[in-house]
Length: 67
Image (cartoon, rainbow, N blue to C red; front, side, top):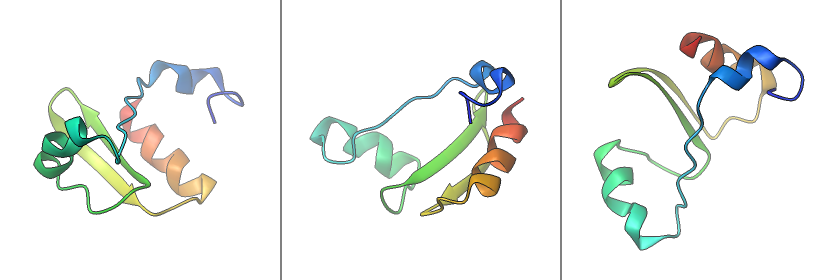
């Protein structure tokens, strides 16, 4: 989506490695249930999340919340 529309470049993306033991505290704190979870924050407020979704429209809708 970022390659298709430059406005999504404004969304900062933090990738967390599910298999890295150092990520476990963050995964637990955010209650990430599984891999392939996207969580959108504005500041410290969670705006939404998608879990195990690969639908471009669902991901686009989540990114729109962050703009």
